[in-house]
Each structure stands twice: as structure tokens, then as C-alpha cells.
Image (cartoon, rainbow, N blue to C red; front, side, top):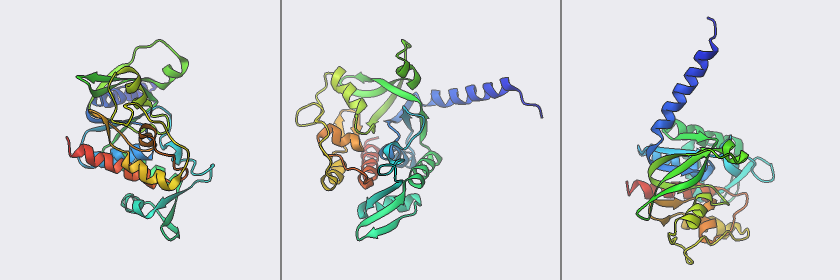
Length: 257
């Protein structure tokens, strides 16, 4: 069989366009493809919800890929082990209550299981604005990451979602857009982003789950973004709270759809 370059191009354009059009009106839009965002998407998709995840980078996984200073081992506490077991990730006990997994296996497995169960992931797309109607977040304004990086004046596209989840990690990118542009008072002590505190793993692990919640109507945060919004400390190279955080937000949203 002879290969036709035009047919190859047409196949990619038609298939991708179909997926993108379907992603323009969904139940939940997640921003950020780290562990919290992907776990959140997994449980939403598992519950039969129409959920899409947008990641600005070429690869997903966030900070989990690199483990600890590029040692690709990550630590979990007992509370997150059931989630790892559900995904079928190999876990080794290091000490009482301390568990290790290979970061490469962990990221790739979570991504694979989430996609196979129905989560739609789009990489290389950045959020530059949000849609707000009647003081409720109801969608995202998207552009190609390459357009953003090159600072090109190219108009974006919009998509609608019943709920939006910020899982962008330390920068809390979507929350900052809402704070800067919407005039909506956030459900924090100050009504604004509280900012991330210095590393304290013990406090940060608990805080990240506690802080994973609704920030304003239609808008939730999970993962490290939650501590950045509500003023919790960073945790460092421990990831159980990330997974528990993503699952918590998925359950909260499922109960409201």
C-alpha cells in the first residue's frame, strides 16, 4: 500500500477537530494535568460525567514525573494507598505508614487508566480567561500554548462547563484570573488568594485535602493549587494528599451534577 501524505493530514485534522468540538460543552473542565487533576478526572469519568482536562505543556504529570530532585521515587502515606491499589500501581512499604512507588509508573498508569475510562485530555492548550455569567464560573477561554509563549495576537476559543476545576499547582493560574478580572469575592478569609506557605509536609498533606473545595460558584480547586488559594504550606516530595484531593473534588462535583 502506498502512503498518501494528504490522507494522513486529513485523518489527523478530522479526528482531532471532532474531539475538540465535543469538548466545547461538558459537565466538568479541569485545568492542569498533574496527579490531582488526573485523579479528579478519573473519578468523574468513572461516574459517567463528561469531563475534559486541559494541560498547557506537551506532557502531563506535573511535578510527579521528577519525583524528588530527579530521583524518580515518590512517597505516599497510608491514607492514599487505596487509591494507588485501585489504579494497580506497585507500592512498596518503606516503614510503618510510609509507602514508595516509581514516579514513572505512577504517572503513566494514572494517565492511561483515566483516559481509558473516559477522561479527554488536551495538551498544549492554555487558559487565558474564564467565562462568568451571573457571578458563576461557567467555562474557559483557551488558546494554544505556542501562541501564548510567542505573545501573538491571536483570538482564543471558548468552551462551556457546569463546573471548572483549577489543578494548576503552585501558580493557581485560573484562580488568579478570577481574582484579577471577575470582581467575585473568593471563599477565603481575605476574599482573595491567600498564597502558599513554606514547606511543612505534615501540615501540608492534611491541609491540601481540607482546602480542596469550592472557591466561588462553579469553581473548585484541588492539588497544590488548593493550598496556594487557601494559604496552606507546600508538602515537598510526598503525593498522597494530591490523589486524595482530586478524589474529594470529583465526589463533591458528582453530588451536585
